[in-house]
Each structure stands twice: as structure tokens, then as C-alpha cells.
Length: 368
Image (tube, rainbow, N blue to C red; front, side, top):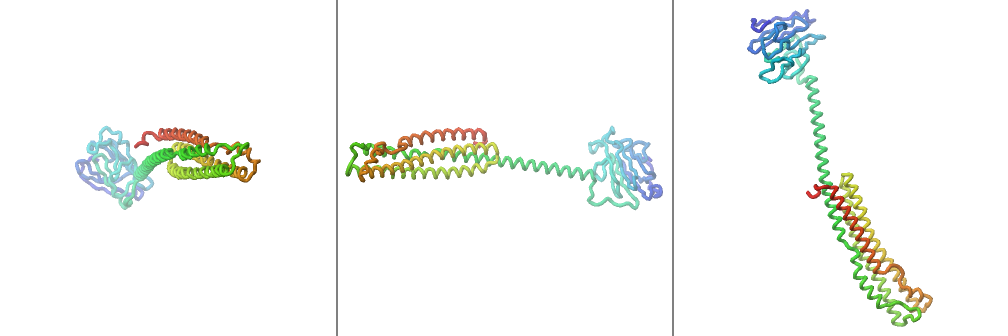
């Protein structure tokens, strides 16, 4: 059955293949075609003379492939040609079976299919057989395509998530940079400083008013001057409280801005540290609130003292003189100012330590 024989086409006896007949048009390296009918249920093809179809093709294995009829279908099976000693010269790969250009190990054959074994092609001619469905893909090829799509999709999802994570990290760093900048800008606010001038003026006024001696209380114009002096102090303290409240309102606005920056941060650890910094910013705001509250209390206490002085010195209620001797109750203006500076310094120091800790947590990328 060598390739040198005279080309001859023989039709298979349909009775031998249970109603199915097939011809194999073999074209070897020399370009000569020969048709072989399928005379039995299994036909072997290879370089060996022992094969049913022997082809002089050095790129084929001795027993290269088997074509058989199974349950009315014609199939081809690789007989281990991949282990052959000679490799395909033109393709540079191991021996194998290529069905319509796709490497297979086993597959169903349809009318018009073309096999390539080494440098030899085999066209399948199934008498009365059906053509391969157009656009049809083998299960192996479909599996490969599906697998590739899944891998690409997974890779795309991973790449997308990675890019998204990096983008969010950049946004986090930008929000942290803005947060730290705004927090340090807020530290420049010095509500305690508003009381310095007032305290100096109050000290002069209190020295001029002196202490009330129940044994020889002031009378007439002097009494009226003292009452008016304390009422004026009460008004000054209240005015100072209003002025400091204006500082506090700016601190509140700054705190709201900082909260907005904090809400934009997605990283859990960084967000937690920002939350800790916000607590310290709130503690700093409480210093301002306490400063305002102290001046309001002093204003109320001074106004009440002025009322008692009026009753005792101008209205003749001498029973109140003993209380006037003790002066205005509560903290003095100097004590309020000293306390504010002390508490504000502690709050600013704690906040600055936390901001530096936040910078360290964000890393060197923060400065980019």
C-alpha cells in the first residue's frame, strides 16, 4: 500500500461498514494523491509497512494514527505519534494529528475534513456523510477558549481591583495630607490671646476700685463709681466671651472640614488614626468652650456683685456688706487666662504628636 503505487480510487462496500462508506485521499510529501477505501472498522496509518495505509513520510511515526468506525461514526485516534523519534521539520514540533489545522488526540471525522500527519495530508470523503457544522468548534478548542476567557477575565478583574486599590490609596494620601494641613492651620488659632488685653485692663480697674471695707463703706459718688465700675467689668467679661466664641465658631468650621476629609479615607487603619486625631481636635475645641464658659460665669458673678453693691452702698442694705468684702466669687481673670494657656498647650501638643503618627502611618508616599 505504498505511495509509489498507481493512484487508484476504490469505493468501500457499504455492507462492510453497516451503511457507512469512506475514502481517504492521501497526499504525501511527493505531492502524489492516492485514495484508500475504508475496508474494515479500524484502519491504521503510518510510516510502517505493517499499517493499513503506509506512507513514505519520514516526519510520520511508524504507527501514527488509527481511523475507526464506532457506533456509526468515523473517528481518528493518535497512536502515540508524539513519542516518535523524528519531529516535523517545517513546524518544529513533535509528531501529532492536526484536524483542519487544530491539533487533536481523538475526534470525530466529517465529510470534507482534512487530517495532517507529518507532511502528509488525508482528506476525508464520507459517502453520503454530513459536513462538519459551520462554525463548529471541538470540545477541546471550546474548553481552551473558555479557559482563556476565564483567565483573561480573572486577570482583568484582578488588574482592575489592583488599579482601583492604588487609585483609592492615592486619594487616601491626598485626604490625609489635606487633613494634616488643615489641622495644623487650626492650631494657629489662639483663643486665649483674646483675653490678654482684657485681663490687663481689668487688673487696672480692680486696683482703682479697691476692696470694700464693711467698717467704712464708700458713700455717695464713690459708692456710685464702684457700682458702675463692677457693672462695666461684667459687661467687659461678657463681651470677651462673645469674642472668644467667634474663634470657637471658626474652630467648629475647621472641624467640619476635617471630618469631611476623614470620611473620604477608605483604608481602615488610616481612618482609625484620623478618628483619633479628630478626638484630640475636639478636646482642643473643649478648651475654647471652657474659656468662653469661664468668662460668662465671671460676667454673671460680677453683675451679681454689682447688684449687691448697689443694694448695700446705695440702697442702705448693710447686711450685704460682709459679702462685698469677700469680692467677686469664682476664678479671677488671671486664673482663667493661665488655665486656658495651660490646657491649650497640652491639647496642641497631643494633637501634633498624633499628626506626626499619622504621617508615619501614611509613609513616604504622603510627600509625593
